[in-house]
Image 1 (cartoon, rainbow, N blue to C red):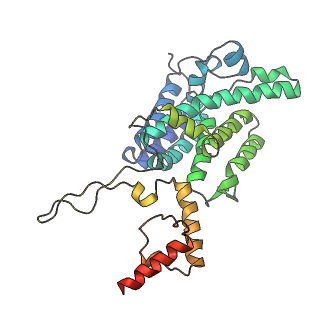
Image 2: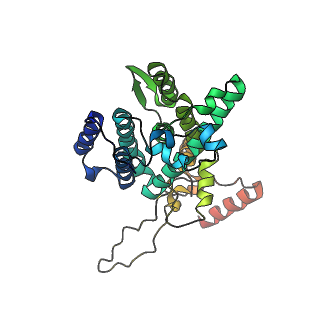
Image 3: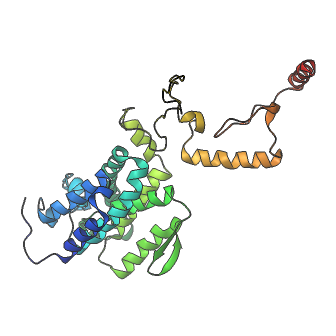
Length: 314
């Protein structure tokens, strides 16, 4: 490990100032750890950039797989570090609070490695499609690939927002694609394939099988709770005189065990059903709080029997 020498790093100083303005106590633990790691390795890089960057030639042909771990946390200069870490700061604050720290750390670790693999695949495809072997030598460093993946996740968990990109109001659904092209046009030296790899990995998580694979790989460990399903909570009885403790009620009692996406879909269907039935309840029974499931259709004989029982009660 060698200490970085040279000029005063204005980008680093500005980054530290921005972090102090937010306040360390307001930054979640994993996000703060990622910031600290990237800053530390910027000041004390493990190796020169030429020996940590990832490329098809180095990562695939020469089998230098450790570059998959080293390349995301090294940066070319202080402004490269500044822009990436400021983006990580805000995305981390929003996503870590929603996904919880352990799962967010798991995402960061998986994304960091997987994006390097996808990057090499994209560069290898360019070599074959364009018949240009120079793409095998393109070497990339920096955390921006992971940030593009986190942008996809942030837009997924916070839909309907509008992002301002160079003064243009863009729906968050398309913001990452517009930003991908805009950055490449303004700064051609950036890694288009690296940023695209981040978007693809983000889509693999939100729309593909990656999230399920990650859950399966945890082996059901209790520390890796489903981020879309909060922990159980307790009822309103706290042991006052005359009251008894009640058995903890599960969050699933109120959500039917559905994920956020499934809850939204169920809520829309329930709303349409209420509109169709004029808001009436079934069997004069009050619907349970939360997400309910429409009862199964009964046969004419069952309906007739229930009407007879209701008549007898009267």
